[in-house]
Image (cartoon, rainbow, N blue to C red):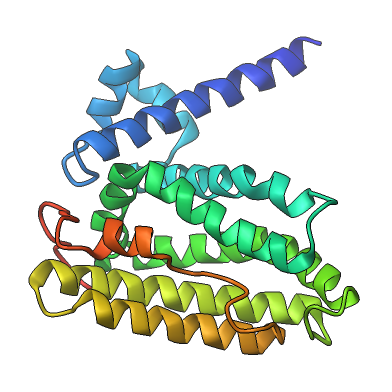
Length: 240
């Protein structure tokens, strides 16, 4: 019993460090945040921090890991809803994740500033693998259901899910580049809309679903992230 309590206490303590890191990254930025800032936030010792994290970058990985898990947890009820068709689940998952990000726009911008810098390439690639491992099973189950219902066409739901996730990661990278371009005035919202429509069409073809069945970027999020009023503050310092 004592060991169980100890494990739970350590998990809660680690989570407190992650939450503190998340707050500081959002409010100050990753580059401006120091390990000492995290310690001050929690009134913790340096030894306690390094018990859970080998470095400031390891804390960043844990923060992004937490964000990915929270976003997927938010849409898990949609993916598990027995009343929804496979196509409805797919649309619900995409719109749900988009809405989750929109509600946390400042946090997303703070992560964009650091995540797409050359200094974090290895960390970013590691967490891409985590995202694939988390999202593929969810999408594979949805695609399997959609295929059984005759709404999708996928000989291998797992293979199709991996293809879709790869496409989503590519769309995300392109969206970041276009976001910076919009900030610099070199990319228009029309270009963004047409580019994302191309990714959407590619996904529809992969899954064999009717055009217009899913939405990767609706008008609301187009204006929220790419419109003239979508200010980011300082631009990403180092592009990929």
